[in-house]
Amino acid sequence: MSLDLGFHGDRELAEGLVDLAVNVRPGTPPPWLREVIRSATDDLAAYPDATAATAAVARRHARPPSEALVTAGAAEAFTLIARAFHPRHAVVIHPQFTEPEAALRSAGHEVGQLILRPDFRLDPRAVPESADLVVLGNPTNPTSVLHPAETVRALARPGRTLVVDEAFADCVPGEPESLAAARDVPGLIVVRSLTKTWGLAGLRAGYLLAGPADVRALSRPRPPWPVSAPALAAVIACSTPRATAEAGAWATALAADRAHLAARLSTIPGVRVTPGSRASFLLIKGSLPASSAAGPGPSVRDRLRQAGWAVRRGDTFPGLGPAWIRVAVRDRATNDRFAAALTGVLGPDLAATLGYRRQRQIVRSRTGADRKPRPWLTAARTSWGCGWPDGACS
Image (cartoon, rainbow, N blue to C red; front, side, top):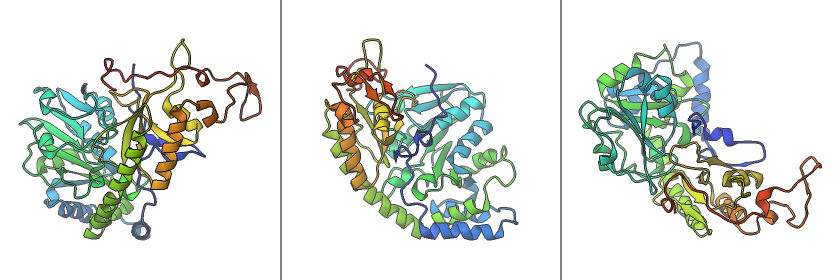
């Protein structure tokens, strides 16, 4: 089955749904950052100059400016990598953010997939020696798994480009496994994003860190002035010690909220929470009732939508199936309400949870028209697989 690699969490959103599908930190951008961005619009007649933003990013990670490139979000960085390099054997380690593979395929490259089995831990020996471009997320989206820095370093080889997506690295207090400051890893390109922590999805701001030769190569396919002046101002502001301290404080609070949500979800019968989560989301798998003998019914994601919750479907990530969903960590009250909703969706009294009446043969729709009851309301319980042999995902 062909997966939609271009599917992203924002497509899950709809009016009236509680958003657990997008991983942007709630309440962002903060007021001080909004003011920085607003002030940057006062001089829009001038062409944007990335010099100061490049220096700020480099200083943040203790590198020279020649090893930093400010981009219009992480997505542009992946596109530049796909256009600037010509791998003979590209390998993307999945499940992970699909945009790097989509960019490589769009540029005409063949892409191999290394799909990790649950619990999604990486053995560097599983990557083929012939791979000359390897892409890995750390922490990985959607698994939330944080790989040790030494494990990631072990992927490096002479003649190999190693792309590490650290879009969620600042979710981890102190960023202990980040390679953003590593200058001794051959072929390393670290991609960072300001989207999630600072709420800048609509502004498009990020950067990459690499050796000077790779930075020059990645700069060549770009049009002039690719990053706007407000985005450059945001990059500078988010690279200051003040901003780093704020992000660190949020990461500490996030860890407590994530642990609370994981503990709540782990008590729900039939729910599997991916262990060791370190990002701003959890990857979970649920056991679902079957719709009929003819085939599967709605997924857990579909049922949650009917209960008023938007979550990120898992079946567009290579290696996952329709039983998997990614859930953003929110404040404790929202997390508790979601845990209660998921308990109802997966529990035996499913019809009552969703507002249907089991004993009736006619169900009233939102528009008032009568229709037949949905088959999955009275179906027996079963478990949806993820594509691996029996027991691998249990």
